[in-house]
Image: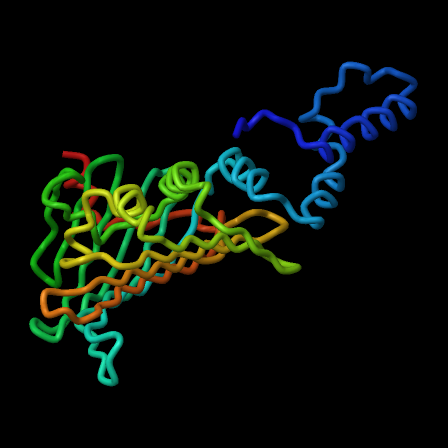
Length: 276
């Protein structure tokens, strides 16, 4: 699916738009570019979007959209054992947030990880480029390259770049639905494509998410219709553990403060480690 292929609607809209401008300006604007034309008349785009985009058009627009300048994502994750029984048990859970500012190129995350066997642990990290400085509870700040021992599994695995890569590689499997305000892209595995989905979505982190036989992957991405900004991302995987019980891993992410985070405060101690 080529990004540059104009749809019938956009071609017609652009043609009409050019005609109107040229008439008004007595042909002065013969050379007007499609981009300028869109800026002068943003109404055309909105009309097209309110009619709803096709799946291909939506994917193209999402990949063309400029990346977000900043955002905060509230996330929760939990793993439930005996998920198909009358007594499901929550084995562990993570709750927290990640915030990002593109200009400073900083990710900051703060999570509380709960595990009945070891209690609670707080994990905080700052990431700049491929360096991460993190602490576990009060154990002091440690600097590590991002690839080391998968420490970054607690960091954001679902940046806009990553989402776009997944959309592109799994486009054929997504189903698009919409209401008056938003679009939802739903992904649901089948026995034929589940391994492909696992490799693309989870990659090397799959062993940290589940152990056993993977039986189902589902995800839902929601976007505002007018801006195409992300609203939320939900992800569920189901697998059978070594006892033959069904386990469920659920992850939810909600986007807040899009393009509104002007600054992320970095403690002096962390700055010193990042700069050394």
